[in-house]
Length: 146
Image (cartoon, rainbow, N blue to C red; front, top):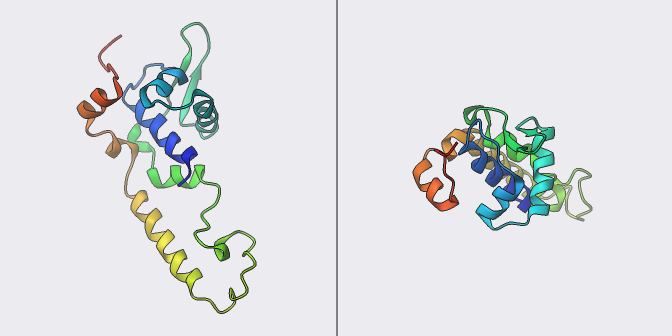
């Protein structure tokens, strides 16, 4: 999994902790000690996917656009990962491995990838944020403030 997908999950966790409230990319960056510039790219992707909404103006920022129970972790990983080639022969163009026509690894790694994604498909963002109290403390998020 790439850092982009990791950061995508982290941003959504943060925003899910503050439903209906606006945060800034800087708030998320500070909570996780991550690069604001990287998170800006993540926010753009999430907006394109319809998972966050942007709010303009002086009190603007970002907020989660769907209920956490509607955001599948498996679908999110599929939407943010560019390549799932665990081995060269799983690349879109098939790669150029000399033994590819006879090799059985492609099937094994394909099956493993399918199992990995099937597990993630069983969970939503709501499952990830069930331990709200612990997450609030770790992220320094005050979910009760106005």
